[in-house]
Image 1 (cartoon, rainbow, N blue to C red):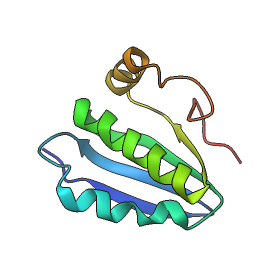
Image 2 (cartoon, rainbow, N blue to C red):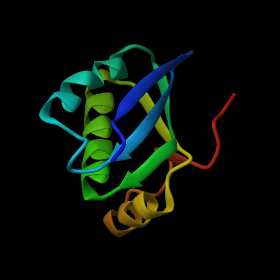
Image 3 (cartoon, rainbow, N blue to C red):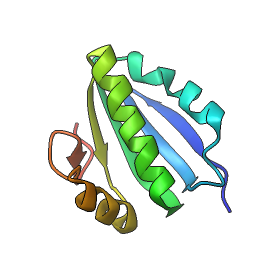
Length: 104
């Protein structure tokens, strides 16, 4: 198990490091999503996610909800295959939220 970290890389880019699982996503994790109001455009890089389950998808959905309420343009990139499969089942694998690479 790897602890979950959200790392501010500057310029509206954030990286998620660790596991996105029921074990690592705590109730306080949702409170830590205040960064979604820090810029008009935010990209979340998931390339450092080591393990994920449906809790990871639930967290992504919460990010989308908060971004919408803040009128923030949000994109996820480098999504782990397991998480992308869960997103496809839910119909969330289409733009504008998902992109294969970080944008410059």
